[in-house]
Length: 103
Length: 273
Image (cartoon, rainbow over the protein chains, first blue to last red):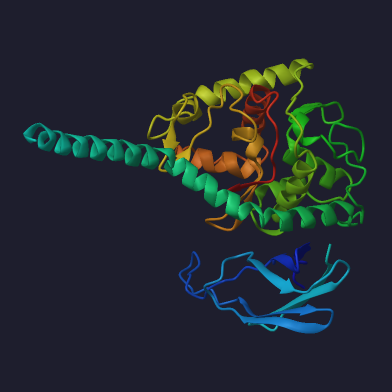
């Protein structure tokens, strides 16, 4: 089971800024271990964001994204008290969903 | 007429040289250090150390180990379970173990006595693996609980003063294939390795610099570095043999830097390139 994300969502004018920190190894599949064997790729593949249950953003990620990635985006029309849900699925099928309330 | 014509180019030269001075001044105001500071500022918003902090807090409260106990009864010097401000006053002398301990060696003690985990086993584990990564997460959270506080490492006990002196000796001890000591890089103002400014550790280097900047997340390798790992890597850079985890030498160096940093504001968990 993956570690939880840290999600902060704050209203700024007519939109909310959402900042997400994800805990993930994001192994590229290009590196080799001490014994010379390739370390298998292991990274987040799909990210989606929901605002009050409605999908507002989806992203497809690959091995170029850093370890423990940080993502920031704006949601138009979000108000204080709204729910923002972030989900990701990695290439091993592991997934994680976390929720935050807009403040 | 001819006098006027002569004056014009001179003015143009004056103007051009004035612009050159401006350009040079403009280039000087943004030093490489400023560039790094700017980069850090951008990352500050999403310091991945937050993730380790959250993990550490959960681990502190979780019942684990053969004794299925949490660490909430652990005494970090401020009484059992009191975490706030503990990091700003470590390393310190603990009567129950009758020795000076830094945060990580104290955590080993607590994990052994309270949870029944083997401290020797954890100390032997490489950084970032198994229980060792849990110790780092715990240290990150505990240090973060003292964020914004000023260092005040105690020197009241004779052992604490002995550790300070030991640390001072270790700091100035030259050896290894390059005949380096910690002081080679950290006892003068304005030294750097590549683009990294090196803190002056023989006195208080300022708020959030040197001892007051760790534990920190290193962006370049995506690792959370505790003070023990920081020191371990300093030994590597000097081509010294690796010090034992939570060994006397590392705790003594912590005492030396901690006492010297008296009054420095802790910004832990920090963020490094």
